[in-house]
Image 1 (tube, helix red, strand yellow):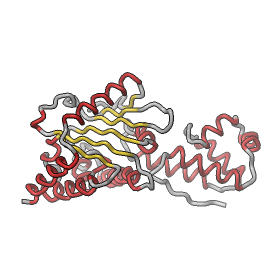
Image 2 (tube, one colour):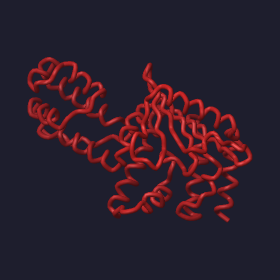
Image 3 (tube, rainbow, N blue to C red):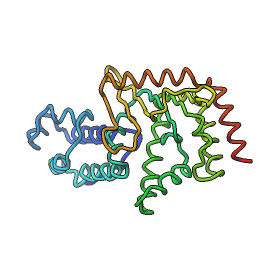
Image 4 (cartoon, helix red, strand yellow):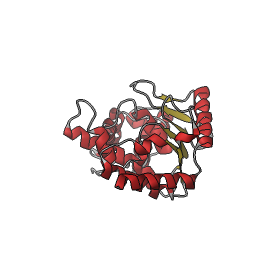
Length: 278
């Protein structure tokens, strides 16, 4: 028996795989101990995989498929999950699970609309200009970026605390039509009760965020917060160092304090959109 399961971009691949493995194990009448004995892994290892705390291997998926009589159900799911992750930059992949599982995201962006808030035309204008990218890669990366946004449409999406530098509203990306569409979308998002969208105006003379954009994810329960630090480097962008994450959270608070209030920020976006329309 083979069941085709598709990746759900709104949840962590580890959690999706673990949930499906546990569901099939229970439906086939296998205890954790019985399955562990059959596929030669420890109970602690299987428990961590089922709870989404450890990434599964293809060897484990194949063994579970064989023992549970699932054909290629789990190996097919894992392959699709791995291929979906491959469409994202290597340095960004570790952040994706934190973003999907976060209860709140604190975002500061100095140069562009954050990926979670981009419309397709805006994303296309950015991705298509990357050096050495093929047309197929452009389409795959755009879809991967749009898939990330599905976390905003969950029954209980994360809280977003977003601050944009005013320059983001004026920097032309994709031309006037794209910018108009993008700012219109920001206005729609800004009306959500779970999204706080603010603009840091030139007049604030804010300098705390000039070194670059970043995101801080508040994780569920007692889990520590994690940060993603934007840079031109392709290494070490994700940090769970308590002192570094705490420092970035403090910076975000200072930037928010200098930013326009929510309603004034939306008015600025609306006025800038009119200029792009003109």
